Image 1 (tube, protein in one colour):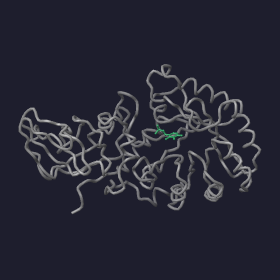
Image 2 (cartoon, rainbow, N blue to C red; image 1 turned 45 degrees about the vertical axis):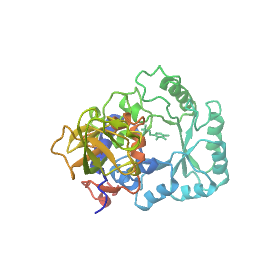
Image 3 (tube, rainbow, N blue to C red; image 1 turned 60 degrees about the vertical axis):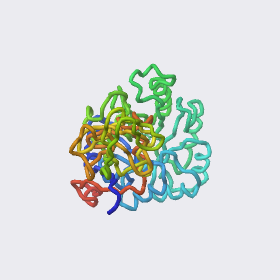
Image 4 (tube, protein in one colour; image 1 turned 135 degrees about the vertical axis):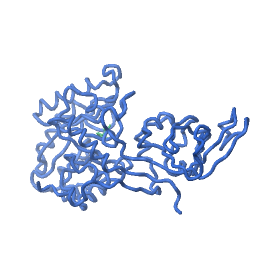
Length: 376
Ligand SMILES: *Cc1c(COP(=O)(O)O)cnc(C)c1O
């Protein structure tokens, strides 16, 4: 018997979430962001879930080429562009859209022959995030060089928000409004399309969404908006991590459980041992009290998370025992609730699902070949 831990990837939920995005995006097109192996769901599964997106955006060139091999013939955007000129040749050959965030990348494009007017680029502007991109006063020079490069076809200007999830937009040091105004000024001056909206921007009913949104977390069934549940937006979790109870212990008053004896019983308590631990991607930082479902009933983690087991309170679930089903997160238990008790965010938990965990998929309504038939 394999270990009982299993991740279910809900392809049907991904498709539902795409429909929610489509309804909210209105006239704007959107990239489904599948970086980090589809936020941990598997890039190929994400492709099947997001078959109705306008394009797929990611960082890994090899994953992009794999999507092409699998038949994805809609646009693909490399969100950090290319790192060396051989990557650029591959990008030309596979018709990839590229983010351009540095002078080095512009030089590569100028030096590498491609087909005339065949390359679509996203010029990344640093409007306050201070990670990648040209400062607003450098952007006109970068735009002019790209415009003059023979291989470049279309140019979109983009920026990424530092505080899109903040519910009071003017509060943070770098506000969405400030970042937007800088991007808009450039796009207006260049007369080109613009891309700025992420999931939080879309879900907050922003006044406008630009030409191309770039949507990640919401498509996997999360919001990132403080206090707002995914279910309020009809978003469904795309991943459920589950396991089983593999042992039971009875603690007397004063007994402790697990490493460091973090949890000490103040009353007699029945403990279930779950066959899942940090080796599977469950966060070791989960505090006592982190929610967990046993046979569908919400209970709590007690004691430190171990490498391949977790200990949970069964005192109010008398029928639970060895073989009972456990949900770590997903359907019935929003991943944000678990993350909040482990000093992290749901994204980190999803992306941290370990490759060794067995994955099952819910059956999509359409087969892959039907999904990839874009002819009609
Ligand atoms: C990851 C990423 C996104 C998606 O953001 P979400 O908050 O997951 O919707 C958009 N743009 C860029 C540049 C990204 O790296």
